[in-house]
Image (cartoon, rainbow, N blue to C red; front, side):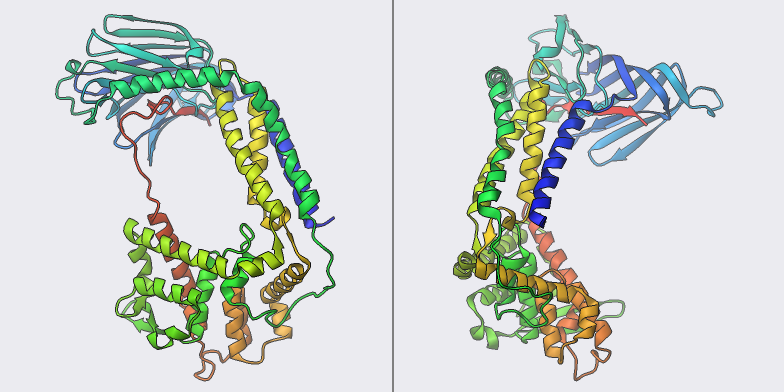
Length: 590
């Protein structure tokens, strides 16, 4: 049985195990029979919260915890905890985007016995800043009374919301499926829910007149009208639920049918041809292809024919080896800088792809001198990051185009293209189906399981090497096997020790192509152990020293920094659509 058959079997096994676990997952070791939530919105924008939870604890636990997620600008203060039915202490743990209240519970005043099979009531009291939002036309509170991160559902939720005004108040409760009763009397909203399952949220949206607030330094201020966008979002939410409720059965069927298609694609397009090659390893470079081409064809299994970052770095190593980039170490008192000098005299001798690499480094150099040690800090801003990414993508596309004929000759991607289309489509359907399963009027286990099945198998297949469902041609299969055996040779120190290269120049080639194949560290280690006089003037190797001074690590770190800087995280405005409100979070036992 070859690796492809094993991969297919493992995928199916993981999918079925995941589906079974989703159905038969064990019950939690606690439940929450009732939750009482009291919110008070003050005219200054401050929000007071009091939450009481009736815990039914089964077995022995150390305590309970409550997680409060924080959106940008929000904060929690004045946290207090009260416990009925046990002795307790608590601590508040701050982390980015989350506030955790951890309550330790004991059965005795000496705090020596853990609680066991007990009903307790825990009340959390705290204030939140920048949760109430004041638009140009209205005040708004969008708050999750129950969050989807709880480790258990709640049997019933009772809430009282005290508002600063008593006129022109509009409120929404979502999802409406859990509404048992709700009413407003003066400036107080009172509501009761049915059981809310684990993984569900329950959200309140209130629209209030602006004159209910004075100054409001503790509110978030948005200079735009909010009523229309809130009302539109609420109506769209209802319309979407009604629409998708009519198609969930069809989606369930589709979710189970789609994963069958890749099996037939593999059988038709994925099986490799038999070739007349039975080599165990290769000591010499199998071909004269440049390192970027070898990387694109051999080491980027996700998209054969397109080089990745290792191919880019291997090209830089090759240009250092060929003295297109002269390397030197600039020593300081407590540190050193790794410097590359770009040699313009050799520029005309380069291929177009190599010129692209030269020009990318030149962009971030000064007078053709690039300080590799400082490159990461140069790329750590959005402008330079986007500039690098655009030039790197252009280089990738250029290499891909130049070896296109070779790629077509060596690899048939019909099966992989068909599989990607099916899996990306399946992944989209899985996400939509999963959301539908969570927000329908009844918890749709069949659609939930079907969407998990489809989502897992789609992601796993997309993560597989492209040649699982595509296949090499006969000549491509020989090319692939030879380069894989060369990579195996580079990774196996015992083989290199038995058959060491005859000159430092060959060692340098090993290091260049080892970078392209993702095994540069192994080649460097073998070189260090096998060539004891590598530091002698006669044997001095720029790329060896470049690697020994962490040059590859610095390049990789800098380029990844550039990619990250090109895609900064952005924050949203005051209203995030249904389900995007403040509060919520979750909790459990520990």
